[in-house]
Amino acid sequence: MMEKLLLRPHHGLCVILFDEEGHSAPYISIMRKIIENLRDNPKTKVILCRELDVICGSCSHNAGSNCGKADEVILSDDKTLSYCELEFGSRLNWEDFRQTLIDEIISKDLLLDACEGCDYLNRCRQACAFSAL
Image 1 (cartoon, one colour):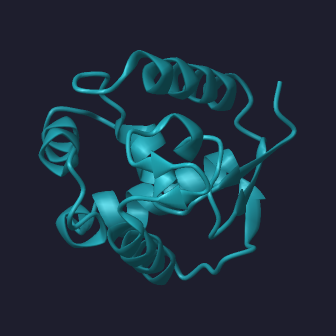
Image 2 (image 1 turned 180 degrees about the vertical axis):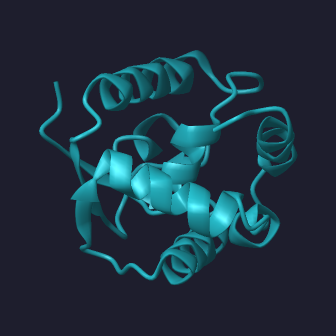
């Protein structure tokens, strides 16, 4: 059980809309663990960070201590924070962060803008269309 989780803001959307297709085995493994833990422990404290987080560690764009898509990722984080009226360093329960992302980005059809440049955007948009979050 995780008591707290450092998470890049846009990764909250990744957790909600995750689809295994096209991802590496290590990435799928870490995402499954995070998703299961957050589902089982919705009160887990999420701390929104600007540095690489646990999800970044298994990402194909991870170049050691740097993100190979840093410009897109930083923009995605900034948009996610702006839409949700949050900031880096914000601390909130996963269930509250999840609901905020659903209410302020997913339900308002802002995913296209918030995740612009993401390789998996179309897959996530399809998940939104076929899912009752």
